[in-house]
Amino acid sequence: MSKVLVIGAGGVGSVAVHKMAMNPGIFSEIVLASRTVSKCDAIAESVKQRTGQTVKTHQIDADDVAATTALLKAEKPELVVNLALPYQDLAIMDACLNAGVDYMDTANYEPKDVAKFEYKWQWEYQDRFKEAGLMALLGSGFDPGVTSVFAMWLKKHKLKTIRTLDILDCNGGDHGQAFATNFNPEINIREVTAPARHWENGEFVETPAMGMKQEFDFEEVGPKNMYMMYHEELESLARFVPEMERARFWMTFGDEYIKHLTVLQNVGMTRIDPVMYEGREIIPLQFLKAVLPEPSSLGETTKGKTNIGDIATGEALDGSGEKTFYIKNICDHEDAYAETGNQAVSYTTGVPAMIGAAMMLTKKWRGEGVFNMEQFDPDPFMEMLNEHGLPWTVEELPAPLPF
Image 1 (cartoon, rainbow, N blue to C red):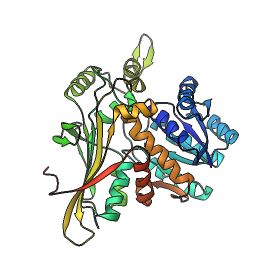
Image 2: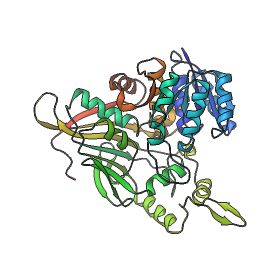
Image 3: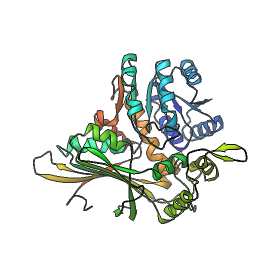
Image 4: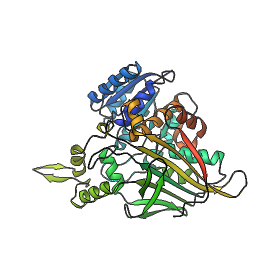
């Protein structure tokens, strides 16, 4: 029985809190805090209606380390689950150190003024968390998160080594909007427009954003164009699976999304540097975020499925030579909405956030310092995926990917 404090009241926060409330044997008390307390109250009301559980709410500016520290000292949770913006990771980690509370997040730190996300800033907290006897778990979403656990499960049960790894993220959902993002627009667009990077022969190779495209036939979705991008789990996988010769990340985008994004880039609306407008500075991308549909509003209209998984090739554990395995989850947008009031993109991140928190609170994953998902036994996490709405399958493919 453990008390948890969740920071962030977007779609992912909503899913995580709903799923925590469905598991009162692990999460005995849930506190939800955000800059906009009305969003917390709306989630708390939905949780009460759906599960009968009570969620306590607070207003907090997570950039304010002193205020967050004070909240943690007042509430005394065993764990903080950071589902706020990646810019706020370090401030929340500082507050956890100040208050003596364990920490978990779903996405690594990214400076506000540079579209560059990497683990170095959070890995530098290793000694401080270890000396304090605290644990920090990084990246317990789907990608990053489940995709890393998938790789480690394959390495434990199927492959002695992983020579090549491809992570394929397909959202086959249709929300009926001309242009909208399925998670925070600012984070989504920064991620998509950044240069692509993949791991090859011991180093990261940079290529132009959206410069490499392949078509892939996704089960229960169909053929989709997917584009090579950089994603943070490539950095941690390269560190913890050192024998990998190549690792790539792919995400699907429809032609309409690409068309709108290209226009927005061309006219400067994806810029993250300030511009002067009527005597005051504004950030074009932040203004764009304000006029785009709120991702949490898309759940009711989104139909279709997501399909996210890993394709890994390497030396088989049974000594039968090189083999290729495909491990994946398929999630239905409408099923996710029926259960939690959120679409599948939020669901596939919020459920692993709940599971990562459960791993820590039940002590199935434990340590002092800063940890990535690859450092722990994948089996209990994989078991909970099957039990809590994200069942997975694994199959052997006849050959590695042809590209």
